[in-house]
Image (cartoon, rainbow, N blue to C red; front, side):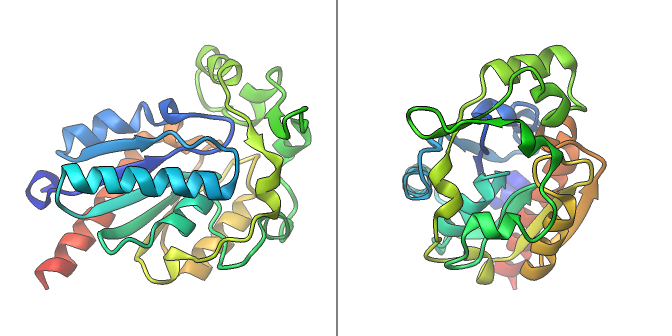
Length: 241
């Protein structure tokens, strides 16, 4: 079905990770016939990450005609909320991700519910203004349901997040005009699962949940792909209607 609808899937990673965090999702999407692209966001500011994402979206559209499902993990959710306004984007998929409203600062949004236990292990900001997760505890608070050896590699290769993002004010919220889907990670120690459910409800997103750490894209790739497929199928039905 996916190949018939010529749907492009654009994936945006989150903080303390990189595009390889989608490594288990991408092959499954290819098997379903999707065209897949990841966005290597710099994690340096909301503006920088949105600009990079919009640039990749333009490149995808120039190379491949067809609709786009935009999916994001963690901090990437804030990025697609601000970047996902292109009319060719037919659905937004959030995986344990932030979904701020227009003008909503991320810090107070995160404070609506008790912070995840993993946030107490953030180090920094360093001399360039970036935050890290203590590599010694990263496997236990960020990726506790991922193979330990693999989680240690993730900890060693983590990309830091600029501290300034917690004060950024998005100029728009694409989920107000785009159909949205949300996957709640019930054992998330980075974003409180209750906050995830609250954001999903506010978006009127089609919501599912998995018993997962923050990196559901690593530990539950099939469930992530199923949500992306739902978004693609819904967009195909809307176009046919």
